[in-house]
Amino acid sequence: MFKTIEWKNNSVVMIDQRLLPTEEIYRTLLPTEEIYRTYKDFLDVAEAIREMVVRGAPAIGVAAAMGVALGALQINAKERKGFAKEFEKVCKIMASTRPTAVNLFWAIERMKRVLKQNPKSGADELKQLLVQEAKNIHKQDIEINKRMGRHGSKLIKNKATILTHCNAGALATAGYGTALGVIRAAVEDGKKIKVFADETRPFLQGSRLTAWELMKDGIDTTLITDNMAGYMMKKGLIDVVIVGADRIAANGDTANKIGTYSVAVLAKEHKIPFYVAAPISTIDLKIKNGEKIPIEERDIREVTHIKDIPVAPGGIKVRNPAFDVTPNKFITAIITEKGVSRKSFEKSLKRLYSLTWPSP
Ligand code: MRU
Image 1 (cartoon, rainbow, N blue to C red):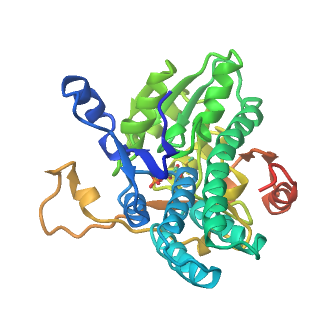
Image 2 (cartoon, rainbow, N blue to C red):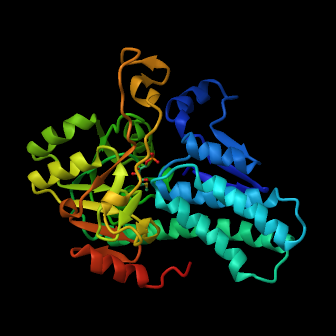
């Protein structure tokens, strides 16, 4: 299994997801091509998050934690006060990278807590504690996904065909995945599962990443363009939809990759269960409903070009919201590592949130 992100010799190593899958194919022809990047400067990690070298809510959280740890190692101040001041600046830069996935802010808060919980520690000790915390966040994310997978697998019948949108897999997390984690767990439970992967315009996470990682696992996967989902549902070819999430409001409204909302509406029309799989760290109880979730607008070049090839006339007006919000009425259940949340989401999400596993 490939590694998405790793802390190695005081640097952050990440697979460059912008290059998948084509560069991996070329690499076998050109052995010098490298798809892993090593970061020694926290500013470069911030840029890597912005530019989507790493993407997917939990993976962004892990990258932010490791970026903050790297930033801490770069601080020269020897006494605590000076260190804390510089550390705040590092956290602020990391928090400015992408606005929608709440895991980014959750991870930064966890890193900040290390300082609060160790009021007597000096700069050198804090640096070690922060590196350790980033490693913990990474390790726990894999455990969380496996737990989520176990809960989710129970909802999946043998021989089910599952539609997924975007990439909520090992590449979007520290490993195993959320929505794809549920699929992996169902396969591990001996169920015969087929997957339909939405291409996911404009960044093509479905065709480039989901198709790539499911094929690596030998899971029966069919790629469709986003506008084919309704046709497949009408034909009776989809039994279940499972997607990930970037932020879940207190009432269960869920922000996920643009196009998720359309899939959810289609699923309801065709009476197909629509599941969201996400860790507790993706739930933002401070946000009452989906209206309040900030939606990132990205460079219009993602829409007007595929790689460097123009697919639209120059000068055309373009919008590129990277996420949309699926209202809770379209969601059958939310699968977390602490159990499955059903309506009313407000009550059950709050209950799951307050359970103490894993202790953060
Ligand atoms: O813009 P991206 O690629 O970071 O968006 C990713 C998604 O929307 C995923 O579905 C979501 O983060 C869940 S990942 C486990």
